[in-house]
Image (cartoon, rainbow, N blue to C red; front, top):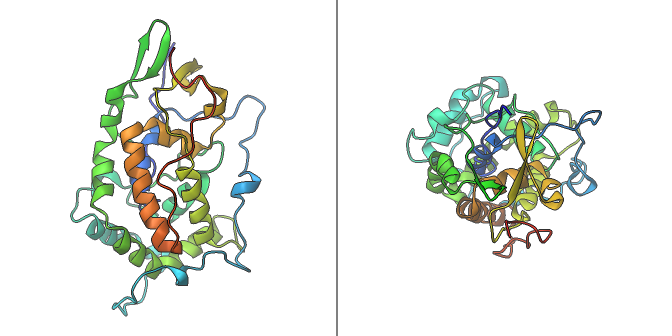
Length: 285
């Protein structure tokens, strides 16, 4: 059976880049993204992840715990912001090591579209803000059981290294200053009354709720891609499934960065541990 290499590989390096988790996680999307089943349309977000309205933001950006910016420079128009945004992101990572990972056009719009899609069941790949990781998605088969190969996590190393260089306080300070561009991009995405920072918090919380597996999850071949054998894992949001596929060590690093960012955004710390993995068949017996 012919197997496609994962299509969107990425993922979170921005939610942590904005999350640099968008760069980090982006990485993960490349395990094969599962398209909707025949006759099934891509579902919209569930009730728990429905976008909030702008009439009463739960998490106004003005509440972020960041110092007043010393910069008085005006923001560029959203459609002309790519150079400035890329320069800012490179400064946050301490150099140019992340430049080759980013798609250099419509950067803010790509970040916003990807973040918005993470809590959904499926997500597209046309608006990913980062390039997929190099190499094919690696699996190992033992006694008829297929799992993700341990070395697969190495594919995400460049993204994780970029993420680790980002100081959460500096990232949130930049995001708060640039917020009008993110809000405009979110409204143009189809949420004229939505508030992007509320959606960002929902997405971060969804990712932090991803299970932490004690054993490699079993996989099944499904047409041209792999799916989790455990229905409870396969029913997770696109972002949570992608996070699992980065491997336990990378998942822990990404979650730590997300917790730090969330704490600055809303001033409330979260528990260090994620929830237990659903189901009892998360790994080979």
